[in-house]
Length: 155
Image (cartoon, rainbow, N blue to C red):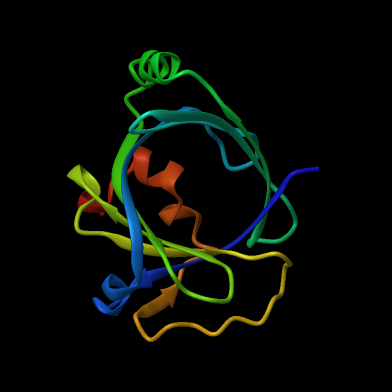
């Protein structure tokens, strides 16, 4: 079974910028979502696209995740079907201790900046960089799906 083990933090300073290896603009749309059900997301980034299904587990930092590449044209058509979208630039970082990214949100979710780290195992000890502020892993209201429904600027 596919699992995503992830922790999320609000970014509180610009120290992460020196660690960026590459950037990619992304658009995500949510075709189905619910606190108890499966979230279905379509994501497009430049010349790549994916369809992703996510579901909760008993742990806030672990979710079931199934992700499938799809044609960019299909992603464009699916994105047109939903008003629940977010736009962000994902910054991939060169940092030990997991796979780190920083998402800089645009549009109605600006100026929100969130750091995420994917881990190999739940409960892994984490050396948190100084630019990571409040941990928001358990805050469902700050998930990407929730931000697509109720943007940061309307809080």
